[in-house]
Length: 235
Image (tube, rainbow, N blue to C red; front, top):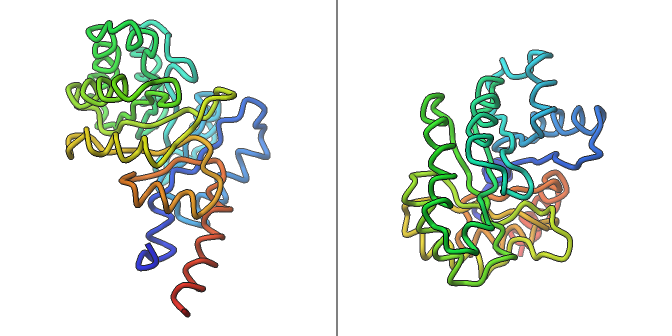
């Protein structure tokens, strides 16, 4: 990872601002940091996407993403499809959707796949990207494998570890990322998210196979990476 420049490292990070209590100042700060550091994408709530659209932010050449069925995922499929469509209409280039974990747990794979496929079909109309959150901390390894296979079958673009919104549930782990990457076999990319707060954590997950990471600590991680890279290069 020390061969990756600071600029290249920033392009591996989705800068996320999804806290329920995130106000106007939090949004403005995230936007400023997004442009200053050149992060891959800015991930915001549907409400904040509306704000950015209203104020002309979306017109800029910037990747903005929002969330579907967040954070529990048991919203009915029709509602997820409608939500995704509206987000793309508002200017989102990507959506991070929470899969129907209850259906997966019940081995109701047809519903689990259909839920994802409905959002993927909407995304195709807009040339959009779909990341599917499977909440790995709630799954055993067999369920994780089933989830990745379903995500790949629907031709979604990413499988994502976690929302980071469930207290007491682990977020992204090296084990989970490595497993998802192995099962994906290049058919779908991996996004690690949930509890990633430091550069060493991000590096470990990227080395384990994550293609990108999502975090609300993007700026802190980037600053730590600058220090680590400088120290390692000078050894």
